Image 1 (spheres, rainbow, N blue to C red):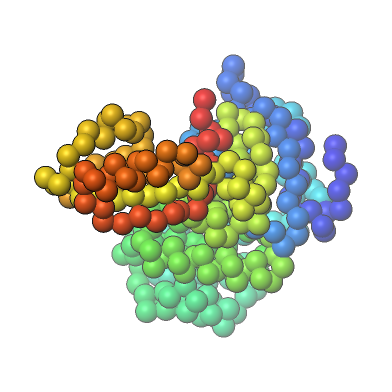
Image 2: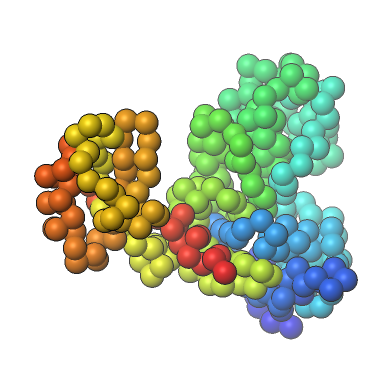
Length: 307
C-alpha cells in the first residue's frame, strides 16, 4: 500500500488490477492526484478508463490492488466521504418527469441546501429559463449541464467526470469548461476522463494515458506535445486544373487530404525537402495558404495508443 497524506492526495490508485475471466482490463495501474489538480485520464475505447473509474467510485471491486479517496479505500467509503465527491458519468440518471428545479431540489433537500444555491447553479449553467420545464423536454446539452449542476450542489472537494462533453453543442461545452475552471480555481480537485483532446489540453494540469490496461505516461500536456508531437507545415493548394503534378509521386498518402475544391498537405517541419517541395508546388499548382501548426494532443494520442 502507498502511504500518502490523504489531504495532499485526494485520489490514489495503487497497483490496481481487474480481470474479467481471461481478459485483463487493468494490469496494475498506479497514480496519485494532488489536491487542486485537474487530472486528465485519456485512452482509446476499451483501454480500461471506465473500469478504473467504476472501481474508484466503489461500483466495482478490483481483482487486486487498491484505490483510495481522501485516504479511505473506495470499496468502503462512507457518507462522510461521499459528501465530498461530485460524480458525473456518461449515463443520464435524471428524473425525466420532474422539472430542472425539482431535480436539483430533490438532492438539495438531502444535503439541507436551500433554494439560493439551486438558483445560482441554474443561472451559471444557463438553465434558469427552463427550470420549470420537465427534463424530458431538455436537449442533451441541457441535461448534461443539469447533471454537473447537481454534482456541484453539495459543494464537493472532488469532481469525477466521465466524458462530460461527449456529443454536446459548442455552447454547452463552453459552459461546462468554465464550470470546471471555476471549480479548479477554488483549489479543488478534478479527475476528468475524456476523448476530447482540446478539452484535455485546455483544462488539465497533468494527463495519464492508458492503453490496454496499462499507464503509458503521466505528464503535463505541454511536455507531452513537445515530446511526442510534431510541428507541422500546412500547405493548402487549389484542387482544379491548375494542378499539374501527381501528388502520389511526392507525398505519402497520409500527408495530404483531398477536399472538394482544395488539397491540404501536412509536412513535418523537420523535413529537409520542404524548400524543394514548395518550389514544385508553386510551379505546378495555385497555393492558397501556408502556415505552421503546433503539435497537438491529437497527435500525441495517436502516437501513444498505436500498436
